[in-house]
Length: 293
Ligand code: GDP
Image (cartoon, rainbow, N blue to C red):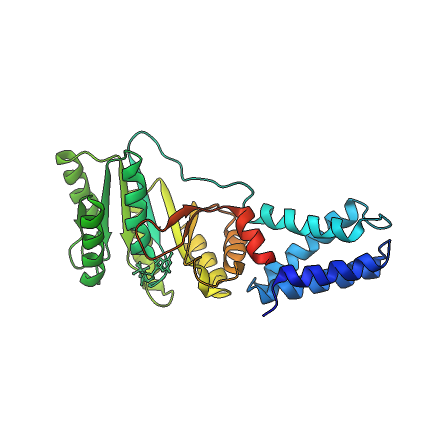
């Protein structure tokens, strides 16, 4: 596997050989860049659109005929990559009270782990956090969150088997009356595959709990699949932001680019280990650097 950075370097070296760029050379370079993006696991449609925008900008900045044309093209690619990934690091919106984070995603994406990490992160910032284990099908998932809650030192409200969303909402309200909390983090059910029944359940629960943030947890290692997942959750549930997990693995960052591109929603956090401390703000420039290699 040759990184996109190395490939761009090759392209750049080729471009440098001639002092000015011809249109044909730019086209060839764009083809190379698209190939390299695909190899970094960026979705085809996303890569195509990305390259189209870079071409437009490169031509718009009149790099043709310019002495540093090659270098300029590479800078355009880098800047556009950061821009596509969201520009600056962003954080979820938080009010003084009544914050509800609703975590959704496929099973195994790292939802429950991320719920625990978020609880730990916000507790250390002085928030009064309540975790809600809202997987009505799998007691093991609820138990996992209970254990995390104990480790972090925040209470966990568990739904009952097959509990309906309205009952969950009522029980949550009762719980908050007895024990005031300003940030509720809801860990929802996941499936190995996206299915209609799951989406209906999630939509119902979301309707009942009126979250202030709906966060899709995406496994960075899933590459192309991240695009379908993000697209489906965005259209069926509606998202306000993303969390990319497992960025400590050897994922090339393409999933982040694709997921961000199709949803247009900010990636707030990066999961960088299995530990509770393994959550960082998502920095677009770092991931751009990683995609570029
Ligand atoms: P869920 O089914 O979406 O709730 O997924 P889990 O939270 O149970 O996570 C699935 C697996 O991924 C577990 O083994 C976690 O320890 C692991 N995991 C979650 N987030 C990360 C991460 O950011 N980095 C690494 N290396 N592993 C993670």
